[in-house]
Length: 182
Image (cartoon, rainbow, N blue to C red; front, side, top):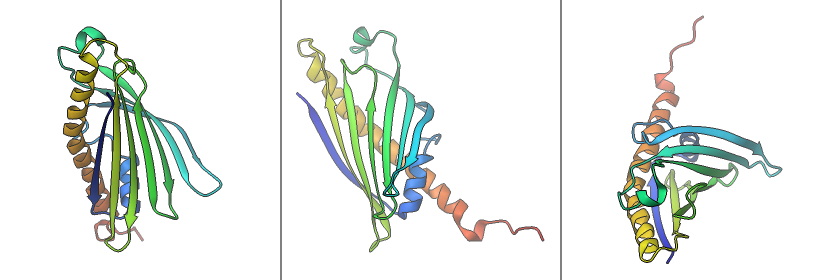
């Protein structure tokens, strides 16, 4: 069985703030599980779209029943690919774990779209949970646990992104800038 989860969210920020916050979202108080991020590729294509690829090291607590399959592993390496289209004010992101994929693979596809009528950025996210595990009954259990855990983590992820967006808004507000010396 493969499980899917789809959700939407509206960020009360313009597209520029939302995308800048996305690229600068770590560290934040809601992401203590993120150990490090490394940008491994960044370029602008012939249509003016920004492409970026990152590697992200994360850690997390696993249920006891998973530990026999993963041993003492508590870290995971994530690849994140993003494409920003500044003309149409859209950003598409893809994330997936690179390790432990025979146990569980989690792929997240998100689209951020600016709504100029409401001056907000809307996101639509689809997540695919699939396990290659062949153990009797364990495959479904791993997928269901990952599905429910992701739903819990999604709220913290959004809070972290909102925290960074609010901080950017505060720093970019002209009223908060120090005057330049004469």
